[in-house]
Image (cartoon, rainbow, N blue to C red; front, side):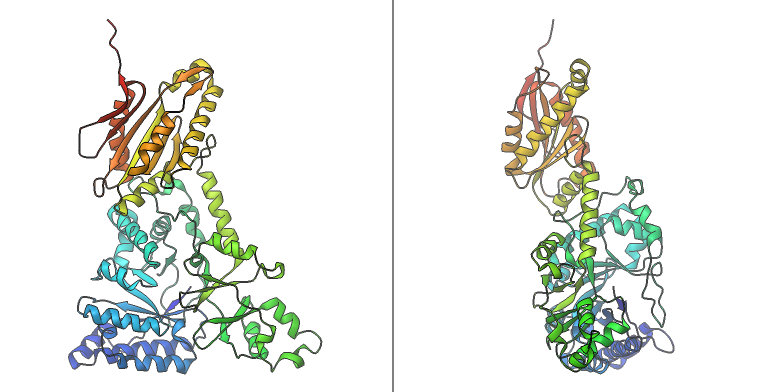
Length: 544
């Protein structure tokens, strides 16, 4: 996906050099000079992927004119700011906050993408992540190292992922050295990683990485330890940025001969994006259609010296915040001959961020649908406990006020024993349909079938009462025999619970209380309180 370029002094370390520069009053100048050296060295290898370079927060907060050499280095090697991710490094606390934010915004306006380095172990304040909305957040290697065996670190990264979904940032895990580390990151939904497991640092960077050895472990449900909660997933499915590839670009004034040279030298590239001076896509050149035109009879003579835009198409654009399903909708409405064309992903200013290949998205969505289908109950087609766990954890992390309800059938074994298991299955299907139909009227309600006759419901506080009342009002029966239900509800205020596991533990005695009541019952409790409200059901009559 990208290469991070670092300039090293001949003697000592970068830290030693920067400390000497700081004492001499030339810290920012030296820091920028190192970034320029990294840019020039990377250009020697002809890398076609985005480039990451490092700058200290103190440097970015300094005078704007000190950054001029970096712009010059980019012009010298034929790159634009849009090709560069500036990784802002620690310490953050020593840089004046106002000037740092202003400097980051200035770089972004000039086309640079922004990354924040050292998150998790450095002094990066969470409020800075929210304020600057970085494109990339680099998760510190110390966090990654402890991740597989430390539930607290796991929960911390999970919270960071949740924050990044709201800011539009991508998490990159640094220092990935082992397969268990990578497996833990993938369970958390972290899609970008960096470290010796994938490619070790070297003067000529390795740009191919294979991680197939880890995939079987990642896909094994048993690999998720009981001490760790399940990863948070976006309900709308993957975003287009999950499938992003670096774009092969040329100026919109490029000739057909220049495009042909690029395609000849890069046989795996499916097309070229022609950009204007602001980095906005004007045209896309599809490899197959272009080569068919220029290699036919008299094709070279007709087109070689003329603008490639004559053989190009208007780009199919999609925003970086779009989902993969939205991308497929764009493809569905395209001309038939262009359904397999790459889509160009753009930012809010319509600048090119990369391209997405339709085949990758189709495959990704298909895998997502298969995964979702595998998690559904075969009897009710409702999601299982993993889906409910993710939703509960999402609401906990968001500080929401919500309710979790546990519903089951009273004396269900007796139903099976007397009416038969087929009648029992019909009863469970009927309850599942009632829950699904009821949830259709309340967008914040999520229902799950967690096995046997047990169902879980997550809802907002203003939704749980009308939803539950509507379900409990439905008469259920098995082979003509009336059936009663028990419902236990836990009202969770912000900060009152810390995990899905705790919620399930607190629901158990509430459910036992509900089962002790006569008829269809409904009880309600709160974390930290022994008081239970009985909303339905009466006490069992004593027999003398």
